[in-house]
Length: 139
Image: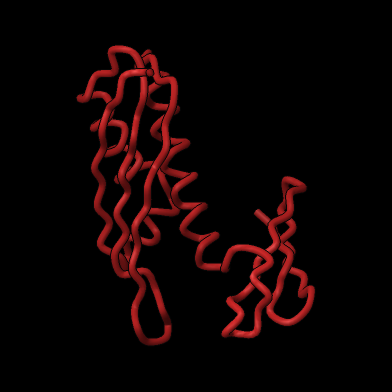
């Protein structure tokens, strides 16, 4: 995997991915940024959420679960001192679907956390990572 990071101005940077997508990242105003995009560490956390969501949806589909929506609410804390690594991350999965089996959801989350999600497994080296979920019926 290859990326290119281009300095734009101040503390703004443009990430250009190998798959031809771009992400503009910027710092907070108090750090010299103009708030033009997410902070770099926010993109790390967002990427991790996307990674585990991908796994969970893929596993639930293979289990023939009728999922109609999925979102994850993520709450994280970072160290106070440099390097300000993530020290705690909590993923709250909200799965919506018809007759979704909680055993399948729990197993999908477990498989993502322990086997498939490279990002969360990597962040788990510094952070305590926890998960929970709720299942909702479609409105």
